[in-house]
Length: 261
Image (tube, rainbow, N blue to C red; front, side):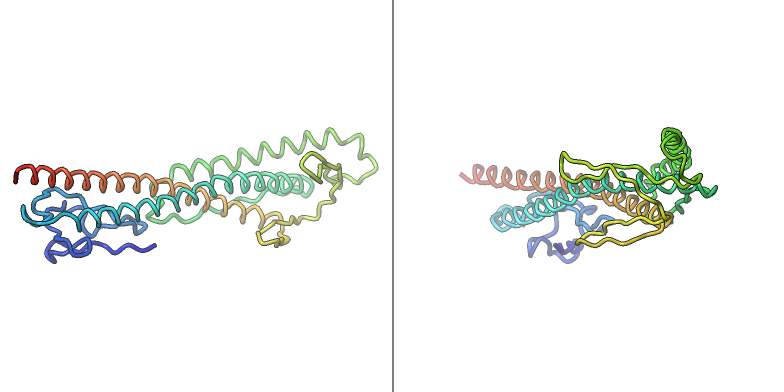
């Protein structure tokens, strides 16, 4: 949904033909970093509506239309936030599994787990540097924890896999056949993993590439959720501003009518 920015006060026109005088200058023709328009704040109702003899019906209608647009954007962002809040845990769990598989393979080959490259930050993400740094600093700790888990798992399986060559033990896991039905299986690892990409599509990735792909997707999803929450807070503020504008113009009109009697 697109919203037309308000012209400056020199044009004497705003809000679909209503005079722009009487508006706070900081709310005229101003957009957020993601292109969302600020709600105009009426500082002088008399100047804004055009004097004591002017009608307010057009102004009130325009306020209602703008408030409805903000509420429409709010509903869309709320749906987006819910989707991201479901998506992020799924990506995180998948990433944990892939990292475990990679750690197990790295132990067998004597290599180190994949180091996820740090994404280049944009100006819009400057406020989230501390959060991203915390996530990056936890990667090495998570890798150590995964290696410990691999050691414990291998120790438990030693007695059952003496006939297998060293480091070649299959991964024992449970497959979900139904909501309450699981089957035990052994998976021979070949360094690849299949990832569902949506639309009934699965692609086979090397473990290292899968770790990088999922890490990037998780980072993008978290950033999108953070931006969505910021935009929702902004929209709530703009809706409040429009409600205040509506109340001020309405009260001004009531006072004017009473004074004219």
